[in-house]
Image 1: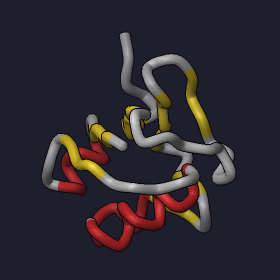
Image 2: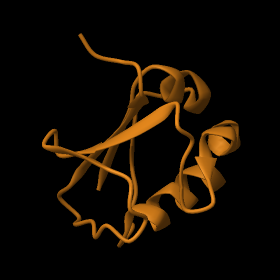
Image 3: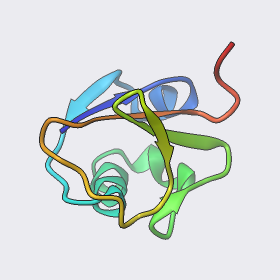
Length: 84
């Protein structure tokens, strides 16, 4: 799946995008925390810090760590106060 970082998550990860394989949101967050240690402050036990939001495919914000992910999904991690 494709992960895009915006705002603070991008600053912490040091990159804009990455490809990972994860069956659930919780697994994806665990993989990202392991790969990008600077993100660990933004990822809590199976979830996200309140200052960070996760959007799936540009359609819905997700927070349940059990949310199922597909290989063709696009997960966007962004600062919760981002937007217009």
